[in-house]
Amino acid sequence: MDLIKKIIQTDLFKISTLNSLSVVLKIGTSLITSKLLAVFVGPSGMGLLGNLRNFISSLEGISTLGFQGGIVKYIGESEHNKKELEKTITTVLLSFLLLASFLSLFIFIFSDYFCNKFLENNLQYSNVFRLVAIVLPWNVISILFVSILNGLGEFKKVILVNIIANILSVLLSAVLVYNFKIIGAFIATIIVPIISVFSSFFWLPKEIEIFKRFNFIDFDFRIFKNLISFSLMILPPTILSPYIYLQIRNYLIINVGLNQSGFWEGMSRISTLYLMFVGTIVSVYFYPKLIKSNNVAEVKKVIWSYYKFILPLFIFGAMLVYFLRFLIIKLIFTEEFLPVSELFFWQLIGDVFKVCGLILGFLLMSQKRVLHFIVIEVSALLFLYFASLLFIKNYGVEGVVMGQALENVLYFVVLGIYFRKYLL
Image (cartoon, rainbow, N blue to C red):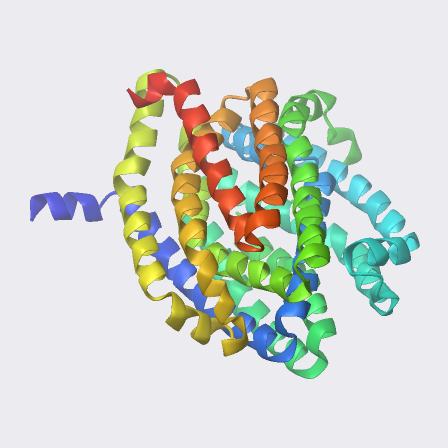
Protein backbone atom coordinates (compact mmCIF):
# COMPACT_ATOMS: atom_id res chain seq x y z
CA MET A 1 0.00 0.00 0.00
CA ASP A 2 2.83 2.39 0.81
CA LEU A 3 4.33 1.76 -2.62
CA ILE A 4 1.00 2.46 -4.35
CA LYS A 5 0.54 5.63 -2.27
CA LYS A 6 4.06 6.75 -3.13
CA ILE A 7 3.45 6.21 -6.87
CA ILE A 8 0.13 8.09 -6.75
CA GLN A 9 1.81 11.08 -5.13
CA THR A 10 4.50 11.42 -7.82
CA ASP A 11 4.31 14.27 -10.35
CA LEU A 12 4.58 11.77 -13.20
CA PHE A 13 1.51 9.87 -12.00
CA LYS A 14 -0.53 13.05 -11.52
CA ILE A 15 0.45 14.45 -14.92
CA SER A 16 -0.09 11.07 -16.58
CA THR A 17 -3.57 10.78 -15.05
CA LEU A 18 -4.60 14.25 -16.21
CA ASN A 19 -2.97 13.60 -19.57
CA SER A 20 -4.90 10.33 -19.84
CA LEU A 21 -8.13 12.27 -19.33
CA SER A 22 -7.06 14.67 -22.08
CA VAL A 23 -6.17 11.80 -24.40
CA VAL A 24 -9.42 9.93 -23.72
CA LEU A 25 -11.31 13.12 -24.51
CA LYS A 26 -9.23 13.68 -27.64
CA ILE A 27 -9.87 10.11 -28.73
CA GLY A 28 -13.58 10.60 -28.17
CA THR A 29 -13.67 13.83 -30.16
CA SER A 30 -11.51 12.30 -32.90
CA LEU A 31 -13.84 9.32 -33.10
CA ILE A 32 -16.73 11.66 -33.80
CA THR A 33 -14.75 13.64 -36.38
CA SER A 34 -13.42 10.52 -38.10
CA LYS A 35 -16.90 9.01 -38.27
CA LEU A 36 -18.26 12.17 -39.87
CA LEU A 37 -15.40 12.19 -42.38
CA ALA A 38 -15.92 8.52 -43.22
CA VAL A 39 -19.64 9.02 -43.80
CA PHE A 40 -19.55 12.34 -45.62
CA VAL A 41 -16.22 12.38 -47.54
CA GLY A 42 -15.21 8.69 -47.84
CA PRO A 43 -11.71 7.24 -48.47
CA SER A 44 -10.95 9.56 -51.40
CA GLY A 45 -11.79 12.68 -49.38
CA MET A 46 -9.74 11.32 -46.49
CA GLY A 47 -6.74 11.05 -48.81
CA LEU A 48 -7.04 14.69 -49.90
CA LEU A 49 -7.45 15.79 -46.30
CA GLY A 50 -4.21 13.98 -45.49
CA ASN A 51 -2.39 16.06 -48.10
CA LEU A 52 -3.74 19.28 -46.58
CA ARG A 53 -2.67 18.18 -43.11
CA ASN A 54 0.85 17.49 -44.39
CA PHE A 55 0.97 20.95 -45.95
CA ILE A 56 -0.17 22.69 -42.76
CA SER A 57 2.30 20.67 -40.70
CA SER A 58 5.18 21.76 -42.91
CA LEU A 59 3.98 25.35 -42.83
CA GLU A 60 3.88 25.33 -39.02
CA GLY A 61 7.50 24.20 -38.88
CA ILE A 62 8.67 26.87 -41.32
CA SER A 63 6.67 29.74 -39.80
CA THR A 64 7.86 28.96 -36.26
CA LEU A 65 11.45 28.43 -37.47
CA GLY A 66 11.55 25.20 -35.47
CA PHE A 67 11.84 27.27 -32.30
CA GLN A 68 9.43 25.26 -30.12
CA GLY A 69 12.10 23.21 -28.38
CA GLY A 70 14.25 26.30 -27.90
CA ILE A 71 11.33 28.28 -26.48
CA VAL A 72 10.70 25.60 -23.87
CA LYS A 73 14.39 25.60 -22.96
CA TYR A 74 14.96 29.36 -22.70
CA ILE A 75 11.60 30.14 -21.09
CA GLY A 76 12.45 27.57 -18.45
CA GLU A 77 15.92 29.02 -17.89
CA SER A 78 14.67 32.63 -17.62
CA GLU A 79 11.58 31.84 -15.54
CA HIS A 80 12.89 33.78 -12.52
CA ASN A 81 14.45 36.62 -14.53
CA LYS A 82 11.51 38.81 -15.58
CA LYS A 83 13.47 41.05 -17.96
CA GLU A 84 15.11 38.11 -19.72
CA LEU A 85 11.73 36.38 -19.92
CA GLU A 86 10.17 39.42 -21.60
CA LYS A 87 13.06 39.64 -24.07
CA THR A 88 12.70 35.97 -24.98
CA ILE A 89 8.95 36.24 -25.53
CA THR A 90 9.26 39.48 -27.55
CA THR A 91 12.05 38.05 -29.72
CA VAL A 92 10.09 34.90 -30.51
CA LEU A 93 6.75 36.65 -31.07
CA LEU A 94 8.23 39.26 -33.42
CA SER A 95 10.15 36.60 -35.36
CA PHE A 96 7.05 34.45 -35.69
CA LEU A 97 4.76 37.23 -36.83
CA LEU A 98 7.16 38.66 -39.41
CA LEU A 99 7.79 35.29 -41.05
CA ALA A 100 4.14 34.22 -40.79
CA SER A 101 3.02 37.47 -42.46
CA PHE A 102 5.43 36.91 -45.35
CA LEU A 103 4.36 33.29 -45.78
CA SER A 104 0.68 34.24 -45.57
CA LEU A 105 1.07 36.74 -48.39
CA PHE A 106 3.02 34.22 -50.48
CA ILE A 107 0.43 31.44 -49.98
CA PHE A 108 -2.48 33.79 -50.66
CA ILE A 109 -0.97 34.98 -53.97
CA PHE A 110 -0.04 31.48 -55.14
CA SER A 111 -3.09 29.67 -53.77
CA ASP A 112 -3.89 28.14 -57.18
CA TYR A 113 -0.41 26.61 -57.41
CA PHE A 114 -0.67 25.03 -53.94
CA CYS A 115 -4.14 23.77 -54.77
CA ASN A 116 -2.77 22.02 -57.88
CA LYS A 117 0.11 20.57 -55.91
CA PHE A 118 -1.72 19.28 -52.84
CA LEU A 119 -5.36 18.76 -53.82
CA GLU A 120 -5.15 16.95 -57.15
CA ASN A 121 -5.68 19.96 -59.46
CA ASN A 122 -9.06 20.80 -57.92
CA LEU A 123 -8.99 24.58 -58.38
CA GLN A 124 -12.39 24.79 -56.73
CA TYR A 125 -10.45 24.40 -53.48
CA SER A 126 -8.18 27.43 -54.02
CA ASN A 127 -10.02 29.35 -51.30
CA VAL A 128 -8.94 26.66 -48.86
CA PHE A 129 -5.33 27.83 -49.18
CA ARG A 130 -6.37 31.48 -48.95
CA LEU A 131 -7.93 30.59 -45.60
CA VAL A 132 -4.70 28.84 -44.58
CA ALA A 133 -2.88 32.11 -45.33
CA ILE A 134 -5.29 34.14 -43.18
CA VAL A 135 -5.15 31.76 -40.20
CA LEU A 136 -1.37 31.20 -40.21
CA PRO A 137 -0.44 34.12 -37.88
CA TRP A 138 -2.96 32.82 -35.34
CA ASN A 139 -1.38 29.41 -35.67
CA VAL A 140 2.09 30.61 -34.70
CA ILE A 141 0.72 32.62 -31.76
CA SER A 142 -1.01 29.47 -30.51
CA ILE A 143 2.24 27.52 -30.71
CA LEU A 144 4.07 30.30 -28.84
CA PHE A 145 1.54 30.41 -25.99
CA VAL A 146 1.60 26.65 -25.47
CA SER A 147 5.43 26.64 -25.61
CA ILE A 148 5.53 29.36 -22.92
CA LEU A 149 3.32 27.30 -20.62
CA ASN A 150 5.43 24.23 -21.32
CA GLY A 151 8.68 26.10 -20.63
CA LEU A 152 7.31 27.36 -17.30
CA GLY A 153 6.59 23.76 -16.33
CA GLU A 154 2.82 24.37 -16.33
CA PHE A 155 2.07 20.81 -17.41
CA LYS A 156 -1.49 20.82 -16.10
CA LYS A 157 -2.31 24.05 -17.94
CA VAL A 158 -0.90 22.69 -21.21
CA ILE A 159 -3.13 19.64 -20.90
CA LEU A 160 -6.17 21.75 -19.94
CA VAL A 161 -5.59 23.92 -23.02
CA ASN A 162 -5.65 20.75 -25.14
CA ILE A 163 -8.86 19.58 -23.47
CA ILE A 164 -10.70 22.86 -24.08
CA ALA A 165 -9.43 23.14 -27.66
CA ASN A 166 -10.45 19.55 -28.41
CA ILE A 167 -14.02 20.02 -27.15
CA LEU A 168 -14.55 23.23 -29.09
CA SER A 169 -12.88 21.98 -32.26
CA VAL A 170 -14.94 18.79 -32.47
CA LEU A 171 -18.16 20.78 -32.11
CA LEU A 172 -17.03 23.09 -34.88
CA SER A 173 -15.88 20.16 -37.04
CA ALA A 174 -19.18 18.35 -36.63
CA VAL A 175 -21.15 21.39 -37.82
CA LEU A 176 -18.86 22.13 -40.76
CA VAL A 177 -18.47 18.54 -42.03
CA TYR A 178 -22.18 17.82 -41.70
CA ASN A 179 -23.17 20.95 -43.63
CA PHE A 180 -20.32 21.38 -46.12
CA LYS A 181 -18.81 17.88 -46.52
CA ILE A 182 -15.17 17.95 -47.74
CA ILE A 183 -14.98 21.76 -47.75
CA GLY A 184 -16.17 21.76 -44.15
CA ALA A 185 -13.47 19.21 -43.27
CA PHE A 186 -10.82 21.42 -44.84
CA ILE A 187 -12.05 24.51 -42.97
CA ALA A 188 -12.21 22.67 -39.63
CA THR A 189 -8.63 21.43 -40.05
CA ILE A 190 -7.41 24.95 -40.76
CA ILE A 191 -9.11 27.05 -38.08
CA VAL A 192 -8.46 24.89 -34.99
CA PRO A 193 -5.40 27.05 -34.04
CA ILE A 194 -7.66 30.06 -33.49
CA ILE A 195 -9.44 28.09 -30.77
CA SER A 196 -6.09 27.16 -29.19
CA VAL A 197 -4.97 30.80 -29.11
CA PHE A 198 -7.81 31.90 -26.85
CA SER A 199 -7.76 28.83 -24.60
CA SER A 200 -3.97 29.03 -24.07
CA PHE A 201 -3.97 32.81 -23.59
CA PHE A 202 -6.47 32.42 -20.76
CA TRP A 203 -4.04 30.17 -18.87
CA LEU A 204 -0.91 32.31 -19.25
CA PRO A 205 0.37 33.58 -15.88
CA LYS A 206 -0.86 37.09 -15.11
CA GLU A 207 2.68 38.39 -14.70
CA ILE A 208 3.35 37.66 -18.40
CA GLU A 209 1.63 40.63 -19.98
CA ILE A 210 2.71 39.83 -23.51
CA PHE A 211 0.88 42.51 -25.43
CA LYS A 212 1.06 45.24 -22.77
CA ARG A 213 4.81 44.93 -22.47
CA PHE A 214 5.56 44.13 -26.11
CA ASN A 215 8.28 46.49 -27.32
CA PHE A 216 10.37 46.29 -30.48
CA ILE A 217 13.51 47.36 -28.57
CA ASP A 218 13.27 44.18 -26.48
CA PHE A 219 14.12 42.12 -29.56
CA ASP A 220 17.41 40.42 -28.63
CA PHE A 221 19.66 39.07 -31.40
CA ARG A 222 21.57 37.03 -28.83
CA ILE A 223 18.41 35.09 -27.97
CA PHE A 224 17.50 34.82 -31.65
CA LYS A 225 20.95 33.41 -32.42
CA ASN A 226 20.60 30.83 -29.64
CA LEU A 227 17.20 29.77 -30.93
CA ILE A 228 18.55 29.38 -34.46
CA SER A 229 20.49 26.31 -33.32
CA PHE A 230 17.14 24.61 -32.74
CA SER A 231 16.02 25.72 -36.20
CA LEU A 232 19.03 24.05 -37.75
CA MET A 233 17.89 20.82 -36.12
CA ILE A 234 14.15 21.03 -36.62
CA LEU A 235 13.65 22.75 -39.98
CA PRO A 236 15.25 20.20 -42.36
CA PRO A 237 13.16 17.21 -41.17
CA THR A 238 10.10 19.44 -40.62
CA ILE A 239 10.16 20.66 -44.21
CA LEU A 240 11.19 17.32 -45.69
CA SER A 241 8.72 15.12 -43.76
CA PRO A 242 5.44 16.45 -45.24
CA TYR A 243 7.03 16.46 -48.70
CA ILE A 244 8.06 12.81 -48.31
CA TYR A 245 4.58 11.81 -47.16
CA LEU A 246 3.02 13.79 -49.99
CA GLN A 247 5.19 12.00 -52.56
CA ILE A 248 4.40 8.60 -51.04
CA ARG A 249 0.67 9.39 -51.07
CA ASN A 250 0.83 10.59 -54.68
CA TYR A 251 2.72 7.42 -55.64
CA LEU A 252 -0.02 5.41 -53.95
CA ILE A 253 -2.74 7.31 -55.79
CA ILE A 254 -1.08 6.81 -59.18
CA ASN A 255 -0.15 3.14 -58.72
CA VAL A 256 -2.85 1.79 -56.40
CA GLY A 257 -5.69 4.34 -56.33
CA LEU A 258 -7.10 7.28 -54.37
CA ASN A 259 -9.18 5.02 -52.13
CA GLN A 260 -6.05 3.10 -51.07
CA SER A 261 -4.48 6.42 -50.13
CA GLY A 262 -7.57 7.07 -48.02
CA PHE A 263 -7.12 3.71 -46.26
CA TRP A 264 -3.56 4.68 -45.34
CA GLU A 265 -4.82 8.03 -44.06
CA GLY A 266 -7.45 6.16 -42.03
CA MET A 267 -4.76 3.94 -40.49
CA SER A 268 -2.67 7.02 -39.75
CA ARG A 269 -5.59 8.66 -37.94
CA ILE A 270 -6.06 5.56 -35.77
CA SER A 271 -2.33 5.46 -35.05
CA THR A 272 -2.40 9.13 -34.11
CA LEU A 273 -5.16 8.44 -31.59
CA TYR A 274 -3.27 5.89 -29.52
CA LEU A 275 0.09 7.69 -29.91
CA MET A 276 -1.39 10.85 -28.37
CA PHE A 277 -0.78 9.67 -24.83
CA VAL A 278 2.91 9.04 -25.34
CA GLY A 279 3.54 12.08 -27.53
CA THR A 280 1.92 14.49 -25.08
CA ILE A 281 3.49 13.03 -21.96
CA VAL A 282 6.96 13.13 -23.54
CA SER A 283 6.65 16.71 -24.75
CA VAL A 284 5.09 18.19 -21.61
CA TYR A 285 6.85 16.10 -18.93
CA PHE A 286 9.93 14.18 -20.09
CA TYR A 287 11.39 16.73 -22.52
CA PRO A 288 11.61 19.57 -19.95
CA LYS A 289 13.15 17.05 -17.53
CA LEU A 290 15.78 16.08 -20.11
CA ILE A 291 16.61 19.75 -20.73
CA LYS A 292 17.19 20.35 -17.03
CA SER A 293 19.25 17.17 -16.49
CA ASN A 294 22.89 18.07 -15.84
CA ASN A 295 24.68 14.72 -15.88
CA VAL A 296 24.52 11.14 -17.15
CA ALA A 297 22.88 9.82 -13.99
CA GLU A 298 20.01 12.33 -14.19
CA VAL A 299 19.42 11.67 -17.90
CA LYS A 300 19.48 7.91 -17.31
CA LYS A 301 16.91 8.28 -14.53
CA VAL A 302 14.53 10.20 -16.81
CA ILE A 303 14.91 7.72 -19.68
CA TRP A 304 14.41 4.61 -17.58
CA SER A 305 11.38 6.07 -15.81
CA TYR A 306 9.91 6.43 -19.32
CA TYR A 307 10.75 2.85 -20.30
CA LYS A 308 9.48 1.40 -17.00
CA PHE A 309 6.27 3.41 -16.75
CA ILE A 310 5.16 4.40 -20.26
CA LEU A 311 6.44 1.67 -22.62
CA PRO A 312 4.76 -1.36 -20.95
CA LEU A 313 1.41 0.46 -20.94
CA PHE A 314 1.76 1.27 -24.61
CA ILE A 315 2.68 -2.31 -25.58
CA PHE A 316 -0.36 -3.62 -23.70
CA GLY A 317 -2.54 -1.01 -25.41
CA ALA A 318 -1.13 -1.90 -28.84
CA MET A 319 -1.98 -5.57 -28.34
CA LEU A 320 -5.50 -4.62 -27.31
CA VAL A 321 -5.88 -2.41 -30.39
CA TYR A 322 -4.81 -5.25 -32.68
CA PHE A 323 -7.37 -7.71 -31.30
CA LEU A 324 -10.12 -5.09 -31.48
CA ARG A 325 -9.15 -3.75 -34.91
CA PHE A 326 -12.38 -4.71 -36.71
CA LEU A 327 -14.52 -3.16 -34.00
CA ILE A 328 -12.34 -0.04 -34.04
CA ILE A 329 -12.69 0.39 -37.81
CA LYS A 330 -16.47 0.02 -37.69
CA LEU A 331 -16.63 2.40 -34.73
CA ILE A 332 -14.42 5.11 -36.21
CA PHE A 333 -15.20 4.76 -39.91
CA THR A 334 -17.63 2.69 -41.98
CA GLU A 335 -17.54 -0.81 -43.49
CA GLU A 336 -16.06 0.80 -46.61
CA PHE A 337 -12.85 1.14 -44.57
CA LEU A 338 -12.56 -2.55 -43.55
CA PRO A 339 -9.46 -3.08 -45.79
CA VAL A 340 -7.63 -0.91 -43.22
CA SER A 341 -7.59 -4.00 -40.96
CA GLU A 342 -4.81 -5.44 -43.12
CA LEU A 343 -2.54 -2.54 -42.14
CA PHE A 344 -2.74 -2.91 -38.36
CA PHE A 345 -0.03 -5.52 -37.81
CA TRP A 346 2.84 -3.61 -39.40
CA GLN A 347 1.55 -0.25 -38.16
CA LEU A 348 1.51 -1.46 -34.54
CA ILE A 349 4.94 -3.09 -34.83
CA GLY A 350 6.32 0.16 -36.17
CA ASP A 351 4.57 2.26 -33.53
CA VAL A 352 5.98 0.19 -30.66
CA PHE A 353 9.50 0.84 -31.93
CA LYS A 354 8.56 4.47 -32.58
CA VAL A 355 7.66 4.84 -28.91
CA CYS A 356 10.94 3.13 -27.96
CA GLY A 357 12.93 5.65 -29.98
CA LEU A 358 10.82 8.72 -29.17
CA ILE A 359 12.50 9.55 -25.86
CA LEU A 360 15.94 9.16 -27.46
CA GLY A 361 14.99 11.53 -30.26
CA PHE A 362 13.97 14.14 -27.67
CA LEU A 363 17.27 13.53 -25.85
CA LEU A 364 19.15 14.23 -29.06
CA MET A 365 17.24 17.50 -29.42
CA SER A 366 17.59 18.52 -25.76
CA GLN A 367 21.38 18.18 -26.01
CA LYS A 368 21.45 20.32 -29.18
CA ARG A 369 23.46 17.80 -31.19
CA VAL A 370 22.58 19.65 -34.36
CA LEU A 371 24.50 17.78 -37.06
CA HIS A 372 23.74 14.33 -35.65
CA PHE A 373 20.05 15.16 -35.26
CA ILE A 374 19.77 16.38 -38.86
CA VAL A 375 21.66 13.40 -40.31
CA ILE A 376 19.63 10.83 -38.36
CA GLU A 377 16.22 12.45 -38.96
CA VAL A 378 16.76 13.17 -42.66
CA SER A 379 18.29 9.72 -43.26
CA ALA A 380 15.25 8.13 -41.60
CA LEU A 381 12.86 10.07 -43.85
CA LEU A 382 14.80 9.21 -47.00
CA PHE A 383 14.89 5.56 -45.97
CA LEU A 384 11.12 5.68 -45.44
CA TYR A 385 10.59 7.14 -48.90
CA PHE A 386 12.63 4.58 -50.82
CA ALA A 387 11.48 1.62 -48.67
CA SER A 388 7.83 2.61 -49.11
CA LEU A 389 8.11 2.93 -52.88
CA LEU A 390 9.86 -0.42 -53.07
CA PHE A 391 7.31 -2.20 -50.87
CA ILE A 392 4.31 -0.55 -52.57
CA LYS A 393 5.34 -2.20 -55.84
CA ASN A 394 5.11 -5.63 -54.21
CA TYR A 395 2.53 -5.24 -51.43
CA GLY A 396 0.35 -2.26 -52.40
CA VAL A 397 -0.79 0.05 -49.62
CA GLU A 398 0.46 -2.42 -47.00
CA GLY A 399 3.96 -1.64 -48.26
CA VAL A 400 3.75 1.86 -46.78
CA VAL A 401 3.21 0.64 -43.22
CA MET A 402 5.89 -2.01 -43.73
CA GLY A 403 8.30 0.74 -44.72
CA GLN A 404 7.31 2.80 -41.68
CA ALA A 405 7.82 -0.18 -39.37
CA LEU A 406 11.29 -0.89 -40.72
CA GLU A 407 12.21 2.80 -40.48
CA ASN A 408 11.15 2.93 -36.80
CA VAL A 409 13.11 -0.22 -35.97
CA LEU A 410 16.29 1.14 -37.53
CA TYR A 411 15.74 4.58 -35.91
CA PHE A 412 15.56 3.02 -32.45
CA VAL A 413 18.56 0.77 -33.06
CA VAL A 414 20.73 3.64 -34.31
CA LEU A 415 19.80 5.94 -31.41
CA GLY A 416 20.12 3.08 -28.94
CA ILE A 417 23.72 2.52 -30.05
CA TYR A 418 24.39 6.28 -30.11
CA PHE A 419 23.09 6.80 -26.55
CA ARG A 420 24.20 3.45 -25.14
CA LYS A 421 25.86 5.09 -22.10
CA TYR A 422 22.42 6.27 -20.96
CA LEU A 423 20.86 2.83 -21.45
CA LEU A 424 23.46 0.51 -19.94
